[in-house]
Length: 215
Image (cartoon, rainbow, N blue to C red; front, side):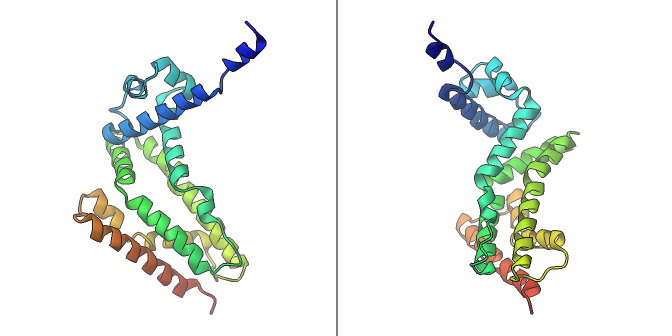
């Protein structure tokens, strides 16, 4: 066998990445539907069309696979450039971009399904999975939001004494009770619910600016 043939069979080739992507897709669907405790590595392998050994070789164990699913999902939907601050732009436009992205993400059915799965596992005595989604989701988001707000303060576009607290306030204002409504199955009309998501996000930005625009 030639050295070129050996190299083509090494780890990291496109086929390996396709398998990894298929495993993540299958795992995400199963974790949402069956929660962590109800999802087996056998089921994930079967849905992904790979062997269980392949799943373990890529992710090690179910805990690591779950973390990668959460990390991949959040980074796909909330990439870091969502929080890009352009000092030449009005901070209102920047905050509105973040607000609408967050509001639609946090209130959509797939995200709510993920949270329901996490809550199910927490109720069954597995709070570490709740902490995991907090670390990969909320903690990362708050860190990026704090950085954006601090940049706006440094540029003179906002006047904030407590940036971490302001970050929490902003993310709460733009969602209101909409995520809880979706969690409890109270979003009866998808059209009116979608409109309310946007109105709430826009109103949250305006309220935030009234509090923190330089006087």
